[in-house]
Figure (cartoon, rainbow, N blue to C red):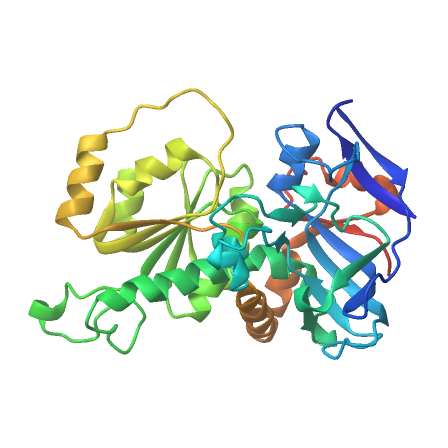
Length: 380
């Protein structure tokens, strides 16, 4: 069967003939792959920045954002049946008995680093025609989400971040006031400083846009601050969901902060450390900054560490890193996608701007000017 693979030693990427997988246990299911999303991780892998083939193999089948249809199940599988749509998780637990996170099914918090990841690290991915997977890594998707369900995995980045945000903000012994999210409805000027839901999303790519949608659903007043070459298109898309778009080319970080007001949450989705640390200086009191991007290896950048440290201490600020996602984040993402379809049907569909057959997957792996999300369509 066809598959898209990277050969790190030869520094090659091509469509190959890959063995068709068969069920190896009663707890597995076999899926026909429908769609595979392309993200920055895939582009980094095919530019040979990282990506590790399975042991004994000289290539890695890429692709970790998937939508598939079940075609065969083992005798002990009960969660899905043939014909069901599923999205598969990405990370698999490390083998060490001492890693309590992996033993508890939270390999996203793995202590050892010896996990594997489909399409990324030591485990073939989903950019192929058929895959076999254990039932516990399958997440059923309603048929009505068929057109956009490939967006589940990138949305899980925001879902895990939200899980952590709500946990850490439990430290504050009060809730947001009712009314317009993030703003105190009281006319009393003594109460006008109460703010708890002003969110800034850094980046207007797929992860940023999906994160903005999730934050809007959760009641945040959302601004998206981005260095994007296609401001008009991104502004139109974000206006449709009620989010404010602020272009970094026309607004300095200080001007952005004044426009937003007190920033309670920053959801970083760019992987640009210089951009992120510039915004970090403008966090409001008790705020949380969530890093999700992984920057490449570049030279050092100047950072006013004294100012950042002073603000964090005196304003009770918190910085959190978030990587991968557990099963509950996939379930939350599926639920949120259903809400997005109800609220913003045209907008959520417009996030997918390019569809490519697997034979032209290499074109999908190239950044498309003016595009948001490329998807490799393996089967219709």
